[in-house]
Length: 319
Length: 267
Image (cartoon, rainbow over all chains, first blue to last red; front, side, top):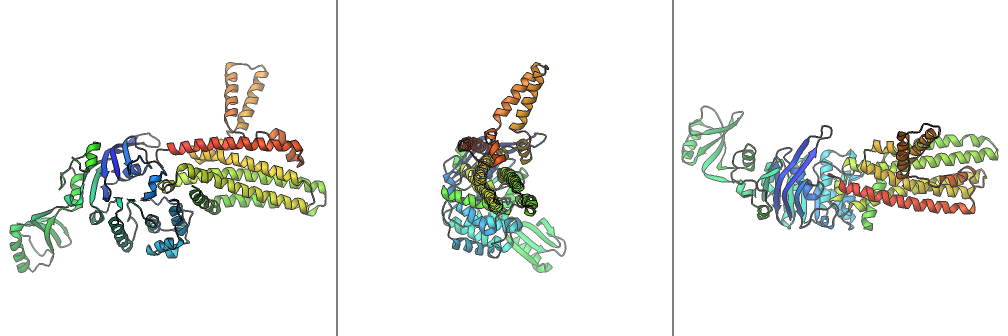
């Protein structure tokens, strides 16, 4: 679906003409049916990578293929693509309804008014349909962006920080809608800082650091469960037993880890000390843990190294 | 393609309709023209009425030409600066279609403005009984033709440079300036101040004069029509020539603007 091979993007700053390397040999492959998430720190190159995939940014060097073709602005291949930008770069002089209609009509087909109204209703925009986008809040603009993505069936959906500025109810509904679209066969590429959201939605993840992919793998490989250790959270009311390794403490609630052989001893401790136990589960490496490990230079749970060749990008696995 | 053109033109018309800057500009000029029409209401002199009609027509036409240049500049610079074209070009709508739509919308608005000016001056000529209708028609058509060229040129400048720089180039560094500069340099050489520097300057000014577009290439031939508002049989051909020139100029500006748009590193 998408193939990026050794992409480099270099900018120059406005006045001092200093070089800024936005992408530095980024290679990845998104296959049909993937729910692919790009995660990384601010300025890691996630949005630049997405712009390159969409043809909005010309790479200094390297190759991009979008559905088997080099991305060319406004080409026929975009008939099957929808894009939700990170910044609300919309036609602010249009009203909510006009904007959704305009973006839908750019696919060259007539979208019935009923569909537009239904989509606006679904996203809670119906009562603001005559409000100019310039007067809409950031969240409302984001919903307009979502509306234009959801109004027609697409094969490939690009989402750049899709839930930024949205209220929790809409986030939840949007998540459900994305799952639905994905189940119907659409490929989704998403940039997000919200790693919990990525965990809930994506099946493949690429961690980008300083303009290159440092980890690209199935999400399940990044979320490992350690069957020999437990993670516990409880209200502390005295000294901790020696077998517990405290991870963090918020107020008097402690998050700690212990080995499986100490589990019975821990439950005895809970009973005898009258500790309020909040949580006890098998130790799990979250995407956040993997991400932090990668960013801090430690090996991630599912240890994978960067890839710079088209061949390995095509396999989808970074060697 | 027509569906895409229609969608873009509808959106661009909404842009013009809701642009407060354009609206303010229009209101100021209309107020000025209204003030200009007041004195003849209190006189019976036919000559005075003719002069006023001529003043109103030239004032309105100047206003329409400036506004049309603004239409071309604003539509490009506003879309490029607000970066909303990424919403257009990530749909199956090519930059060529979008640019053609933007140009067509500006031309449509220019046509509408010219029709309004023509209708207003025709109404005044009926009310004041000044029989110069053919002249009014000729001048209005000529203004429309000039407007098309101005729109095309400002669309190009708006694509390539910052709007402030585009406006400066259009208003100051135009072919008239370099014609005057060439004339001055030639006069200085004729006065005996000959030198390689002045001779080079003459060549540079002449090149720039030829390179920059002229919006009224047959102005010297049609100047009398603007003062007398009377059209001779042979005058219409200059209108056709002007139209041909402006169409070629528009095609050239469109191609260059499209090239610049496609060559942009970042939309």
